[in-house]
Length: 129
Image (cartoon, rainbow, N blue to C red):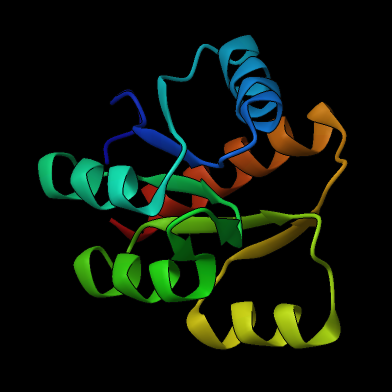
């Protein structure tokens, strides 16, 4: 991704309010994003597009976020992934870390954190490409 190339961001969360909130933070930075609510939709999105950054919930109606993170890593190792969940346990943190999550964010979150993570992780992605 070149510095002036727009980012491509995917938000995967079955909670529409969370998707809206993350989208609001990204829109404030004029970053393009897509919101999906299931693991199936996320897989379809990855088959048709390349994503630089994913905000991923752990508990989806049809998928486990850790398993989905593994699939994302296989398809697109350079994609930055932020786990966003209300299911915060040491076991989930460790599983996310082992699966390759770049960050782990607890719900509820501050939009400033979402904006910070988006800009920081996209900048990191640009440096490694």
